[in-house]
Amino acid sequence: MKKIPQISESELEVMKILWELGQATSSQIVERLTQTTDWKPKTIQTLITRLVAKEAVRVEDIKAKAFIYFPNVDEEEYRSYANKSFLQKIYNGSLNLMLASFIKEQMLTKNEIEELKKLLDREVNN
Image 1 (cartoon, rainbow, N blue to C red):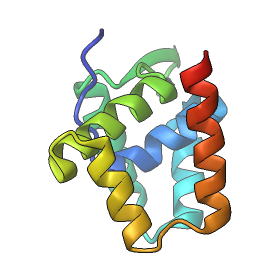
Image 2: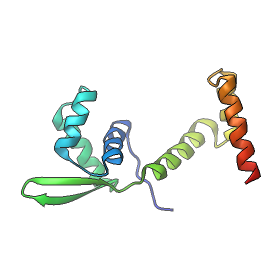
Image 3: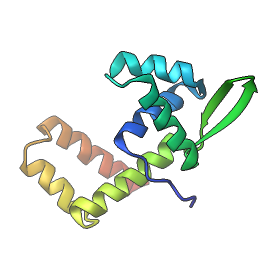
Image 4: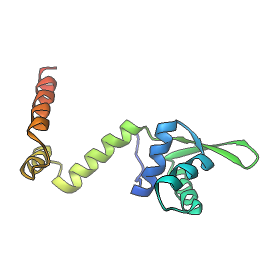
């Protein structure tokens, strides 16, 4: 399994754009994030630079002063890693404990619980 770099919540916003678009220039990333956050373009550029340094994003020089960025980390790979990391940090790796907590805290509706039961049944029977 390839090593997944630590990605901060802010950096994750950049990654979401790259996953959605497949590739983007820094101008495209800045344009998107200035619409949805109160971040300054320089802050966004710093996030992109950090992601390149962490090798979560690769960069190609397309023409003078223009760079295009590509995600180096697959969205599903990252989601799997983040789920395992969350589970380990918060619930000591226990999926049962997490589900019991969600159900107990009434974060799942009866309908969601039924859907979860169906999903578990499908997985057990495969």
